[in-house]
Length: 113
Image (tube, rainbow, N blue to C red; front, side, top):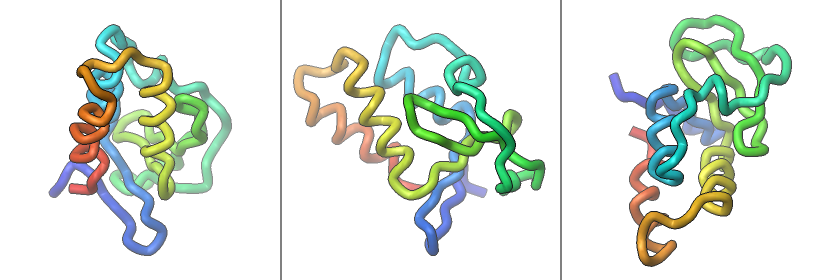
């Protein structure tokens, strides 16, 4: 089974916690916090985790509202992952000489597996 689950109908994507943390570290070399420390908690979500069916929690990640299963990962509605990465990119120092190089590298992270 792949590390990400995607919905062709709504274009949403479920990404494992460790994978989201790795993406954020690639954007900001000094990011050492765990995802639970980064997500601002909200309330309950009506959406169950696609891995375990436990109701997920609503939270904000870099100003984007997401649904999160504490054990398995985050559900990103269409374009939410891209918005998180753009927000992170705007906050972080680029790790390469050109920002287009950063986005080219991140392009592979944004494609469902």
